[in-house]
Image (cartoon, rainbow, N blue to C red):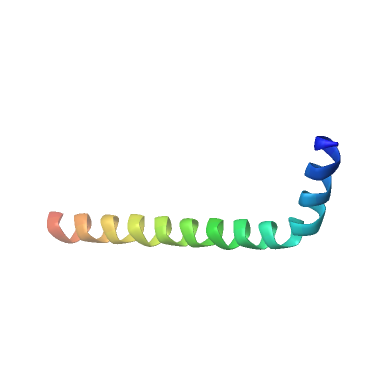
Length: 48
């Protein structure tokens, strides 16, 4: 019974969870990229 409930839950909310997970991953990757770029540019500016 528990297995059936889990399968039903994942099938009914699969699209929403995937969309949320994808949005979060894109946001985290984008933020990390901006943070790294900002850190590199600021360190290059302070060196020169």
